[in-house]
Length: 322
Image (cartoon, rainbow, N blue to C red):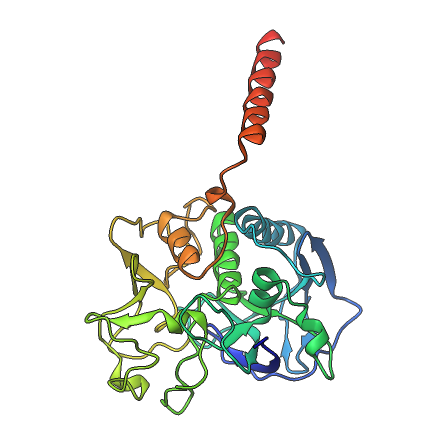
């Protein structure tokens, strides 16, 4: 059966957000970058009729945001739909001084399982559906202005250039499926509706967190060793004893043989880091488990590979003759 989708809004990261119709402002700065259409809300501009930006966007920060989107463009090779990913950003002041950023994604629920050859799941973000499955989710909106990702950035942090870009890469990652929707705000498990990430969650004994009767509420899972597992690869997921809103169950923290230090998708970030804006092997393994096709994994056809090597060789010779 071909899936049909109904839309629903849900929080996918740190900040809890209410979803209303988008209100635009003449002061909003918009930039296009391949699959992304990016709206920067300046001081006083309001998104969702309720979230107002508290600072203007400098050209430097805009360029760093474009760099964050470019890293995703350079990494993901899946076929894209005809409609761009609508990314919206505001500056804000979080109540918690440890929160440096938060994001929300619009999601859709399917009437059947979304993938045939994968563990059952029936919920996906608009970004996943557009970029991984080529579905134009803008056409599924019955009213209002379609949007896909909303990101809030803490205005009071002394970000390094790399720190700022890495935070944005991280938040965009939640919209690509690095996120859990298994438990609702009442601590209950949504046993009949969950996303691909949740479908891969298992405990130390291999029991599915999404489908096992061992886990009926969020509190029944807290503090346990929980992993993303596809049967061959296993990556531990952040799950402290005390629930951390937007962080618990929704970030990779470990994986045998993987580098955790420079991970962008890890649950903790340093706004003043000097770490490079590049995915670690842990990040890439996480994306593979979620079913993304990575450009680095594509092996060129023999003729293409040969031409590429010839081009590199000729370029090297030309440089030496200068």
